[in-house]
Image (tube, rainbow, N blue to C red):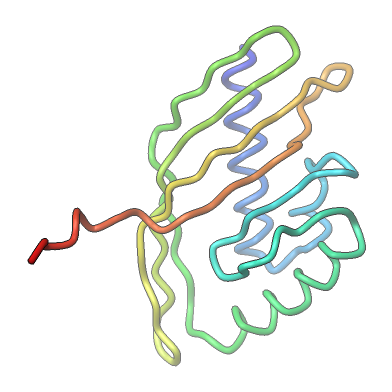
Amino acid sequence: MTDRDSIRAVIDGMFQAFLAHDPAGVDAPLHPDCTIWDLFVPELIYGAEQRAAFHEADREQSMARGPLTLDIGDPVIDVWGDTGLARYVLTFDYQPPNAIAGRVRITTVLRRSGESWQIVHHHEGMEPTGVPAVG
């Protein structure tokens, strides 16, 4: 398996765990000092304690919505030694009740730890819909 394949597997596994409402599975590939800019939270999430609080709140909002589907586009992945960088678009769709859908641009930074990759930073932001009209 190439480094790019391994990084893709880490990303896919993290989102599969999210779909399964498995916070431990979501946290498994994260470095202990991982930082996260999440789509629905304005604050930078840093460290295990903040991630645990975030996971609880995120699980509650997710459970208040209908079924979720995710589609991860083909990532652009670069590897420089023990550093990996993945950029990709994720399309999400929560069904009613409390439906919401969108496209999210994501950047995930990883560091090799032994034979595996750990996420050191994960950044999500809604895909822009274009330049606002002027005038």
